[in-house]
Length: 521
Image (cartoon, rainbow, N blue to C red; front, side, top):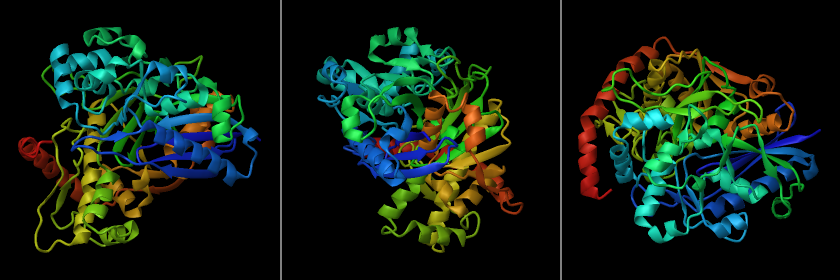
């Protein structure tokens, strides 16, 4: 029986799952890679780290499965979105084998491009105009501001720039020799006309960029190439194995959670926190009131298209430090204490952490506040508060920020009936219950934990003909391990806290900007 391989190029690790043709996981593996922060607010990674991790993961899942590599029927890819891999002509000519990227990739959570974002707003006339063109507001995490930063600050590098691609697409280039991307990842570049699923000629012209810098775009369930002799020797896969284009980690995570139809929402707590909703129609965050905020949530292309059938759309909202907030506190403040211990302490602490709130904006913020100057804070500390309160406040602050994003979705016309949970934060029972209470909706936990990698494997099945559509794949392969309903006693407490929580950001936002100027961030 053929096996389906899904690979997810994450921020902290590359993960892989090998599935059978029912979508059941046969083997899984991961390989970590380092994140570089050379300056405050900067976030970079060397693309060759992703390739080495991918090779390790592929070899390990094949070893663990005990199956011959020739049994792998197709490979699907997922990856962190928005990152900018800058490639030279030599890198393209050698499929990335003999020429590294021109510099480390700028990642999704890199905040250095605030001046470029402001220049974009001035060039286009308004945030609204940007949303009208490409479905999304200019924010620091997206790809276009990174290209503009490179042109302004590293002109010698820009002079040699032949192509820009996304992280997973760099890995696919090395696997297949073909440079391409999918409509979902392209939608997160600020250069893509999301409504019409094509590169935006007007946006390229506005910023005097060559459209040939960006790869061709394909629907997510399309074969993008085959394993080359080089990749076969490196990974152990059989030469000629089809590689499906896949999509960004948000889209693949939605597939891995079965969120491919209206009424379903995904809340994924990884390093970042993402709320995702499938939409049968294109929806941009544009109010009829021209003075109202626009672009706080993102219009994306859903990963349910194939070579012959274009897919639908999705809405996403991303907060930048979700489970990353807990990871930071554990290392910086709690001496590396086991997560299990911290979470048990939090579960034994009263709802509301005895009047303590946590603002989880440790890397600036994208949604619900597009503010690169935003900072984290505990608010309401007293001498009674101990470590358990600090941890509980982190869990609650992240969940309430995700609720704020969910409320923006509802205002855009999404009608959620159930929230499916994903990411590392979903492993925690107390965090699952906090989310159900904060969202005031039932929260379901999919049986398979590796959402984006599993989703990429299912896309591999669609692209290779195992299933006719992504919806069919999810109906066959996705099951729910647990559903938690909102606690009737605790949910009203979060509803009351939510207003105060939002007011804290409004009051502190000017101070955050001042602190950034003082600290040189």
